[in-house]
Amino acid sequence: MNKQSWLCMVALLLGGLQAQAQEAPGPRSRAEAVEVIAGLRKIVAPEGLERSEKVRIGGIDQWVSVRSRDLRNPVLLVFHGGPGWVSMPTSWYTAHGWDEFFTVIQWDQRGAGRTYAANDPAAVTPTLTIERMHADAEEVVRWTRKTFGKEKIFVLGHSWGSILGLTLAAKHPEWLHAYIGAGQAIDARESERRGWGWTMEQARAAKNDAAIRDLESIAPYAVGKTPLSVKDIMVQRRWLNFYGGAAYRRPNAGFEAAAVTLSPEYTDEDLRQVWTAESLSVEKLLSPILTTDLSHVKQVKTPVLLFLGRHDRNVSAPVAAEWFAGIKAPSKQLIWFEQSAHEMLAEEPGKVLLSLVRHARPFAERAGDVAPVVSK
Image 1: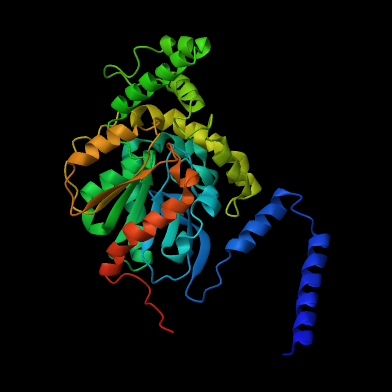
Image 2: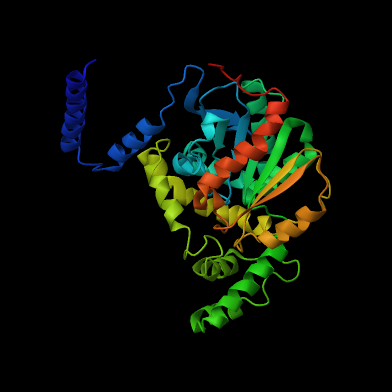
């Protein structure tokens, strides 16, 4: 091709792109925005898979999404936090690129997200117990291993999901290449006490009379064995979030919640119900969750990776780090996220991806559970 022909081709291409841009100045609705995002992340690899489906887990329909550029890669199953804080609808941003190295499964737990919308709330609500959630987690792993023909998978548990994940890792290490705890919960009461103390320090330093008054109204906080009320927890969280204990240097995690509205996996009806579902999960599960103490777990017979936000006071990073220092495992590694609090998946998504590829995937590589490298 001579220079003149090449310049003509470039001009035609640019002209076409400019015409398209003039015809479509930008998304004018959620549907148009979602279409753009779905198009950008569309999986076209012949060995890949992109689907959402209902799976029968624990006697009800539970939703999962599966994304993989190559199904020969290791499976990474995500246990979201909350309770009820689903990760599927924000994964278009937080988990961008993961499917190039893993087969990624996002699961909306019982009473949360699309799973809530798929079932009769009146029938499901009585089953929202800690014991049932642990049983669901095991069942989802069994389904995953069978469906994708994997002897071992990775489980990443965030926040409340890290309680499910660590408990599963301790009970069934043979199912896992490694366990990845993000914002790991260990001793919930100690975490709550430290979070209250830190928040009070910030309030006093700022001479914030409203915050001081609210925090004093729930004192002594997380002392004794009586379960905390959701009302008191919300008072603590309001001011802890305000001072950046949940999202570093931000007053709350609303920036992440807003991303839910752009989810290609969620319908308009799903969106209408997602926060109703979260409220139900909080009402039924949060108080019992905050009685959890996993500090008795001194040994796990699978590799353990911890992703901790340096500024996390929502689920105390120092409490998790202190526990991690004494845990015995075939291998263990703690990765600090210096610009994050509790929401490191959204606060530092690039470092999360890099850490998964550098520190988790090699366990699967050594086991031969990866797509073969294509030589050129």
